[in-house]
Image 1 (cartoon, rainbow, N blue to C red):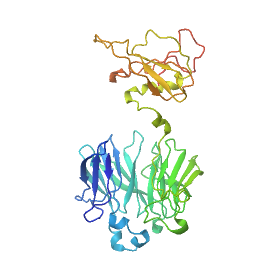
Image 2: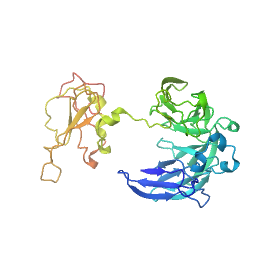
Image 3: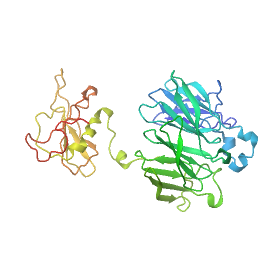
Length: 393
């Protein structure tokens, strides 16, 4: 677990670092934010691209600034100079900074494009209201450049959070001061274009979206000392549906009314992700065949069941894959393997089904033919779905 800090205990300025912890919460190591080669030592967000072995970090400000009321802070010219103006690229494996980018105006959230072929990330600078692109050039060098403007910078809309679509084609931006949620077309990341804007609150902070992009969630609180006062101090979590044209309110949790405090950040999950065990990557081929297999009848034991799996009926919400390893032998081995325990998986379990696989517990067991599906006894065509007898997904 890599944690980015904002300040330090020595002088409470913005010079800070990152700390690494293991899964038990035990401290492992720390890494100072770069102060040489143009680095200002400030920190805020971090974003990893493991395929490129790159970690990007951004910069905000220190304790002495963010603990002051915002209205007072912006009137202090010297204090306004103590905001981050850089991003850093790191060698992820070595945890060493490799390049410093000049990004004026406190670059905050960083989002990598999740499209497999993309090699770029974007960030928004809070004080200058600019979108910046970090991308490899033709020579493989990482470069950062300003590519778009958010609202009217003269009015300091204060972009605070961004959320990129899973295909890297769109970007949501929340601006705190004007309470506006904007959508930018990122089809060309070199020239993003705003295509939609809606006032979603008197103050808005974080924004998240569902994986399919059809739902958008917004919270209201930036910092206790920076939130607005009086009637403008809304504290909420609001959900919207998005049809590609308009944000439509779906629900709201009023944190003030419910006495829940300030609604700052959100991390969205899925009940289905928590209901069953984590499936090893090399066993995921099993899941691909469930949609087709779930409509099939269960038949008697197959003599070729060793090194394959059967599905049996289970309570709604689960099916159980029961690999029959007890009667199989590894090639070149003289001993049998112990029967494997049934593993609960998510599927349309109200259908009785059977599915046959190669042995997915061996790393080399996943072949191009997986999963292979058979439909009950030979000649039984009563419940054949509209997919090939042997289909691979």
